[in-house]
Length: 323
Image (cartoon, rainbow, N blue to C red; front, top):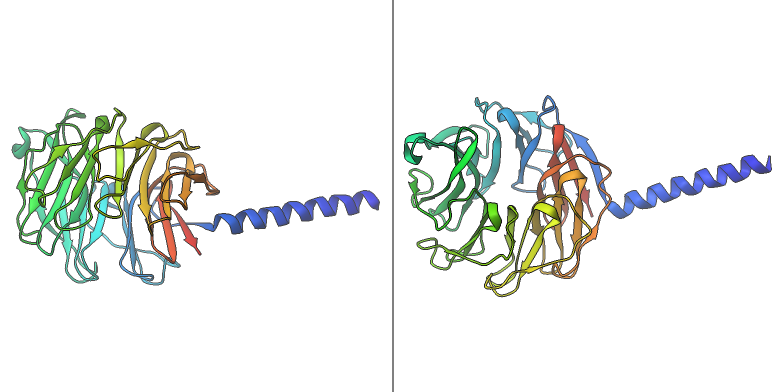
């Protein structure tokens, strides 16, 4: 009897510990019926209405805060790499070399523009990231490849809300992966080979900043014109507090590739990456603490606000964080 009581107490303690660990992490897992397709992008326009997208043109929508997801057919086989809304009605999706646009909150989508190989000396274009820095001015970045080898970067601008796009020539030929603007004038782009590009004139000119690394950088996030972070391969986290004139490496418990970073306030930031990695900072990104994600699957994208957080990854995995 004594032995059974002791075992029961141990089991109870383990259960309590598990509950505490779950409460500390705050992350719960779910899956969308994607046919085991990886999810590469997530975006919420408010607490209830959101989108996830991924490989082979998979796209799904929720109007109840992620309790249920409904697939929407886009009609493409390319991977969807980014979703971005400029307001609750107008949204954009990047798939292959195409930009799809919605003007009714994502209920319907049309191909608004398609980049073709002849614009890139016969190389095949693929778009990764889209952002607007004004009502009419927007940007896309990506790469052009030939025989599965990256041969050039892509940087293009729209000045008419996405009706037309002009291809520019950035000061880098590496793969450009993510773009972020903090206002109408100041923006940053990161990519392969440690590339960091910066503009202070609304994108009319771009200059390279010294990252002091050669690893691929996958994501960049700026809170204001001074403070920014970028993440990439080999657990790399870089931080700047002078607008990118100098970048400093931040020590981290992660060793794998980090794929997305986002700050929800001046102090609080989150990072996700391969192997189920989730990191959190509460001191303006000076130090990072590993969180319990409950998964070893890759997490490719992150969307977080002051109430909820979302991370998406391999085989339709969706993680939700609730405060």
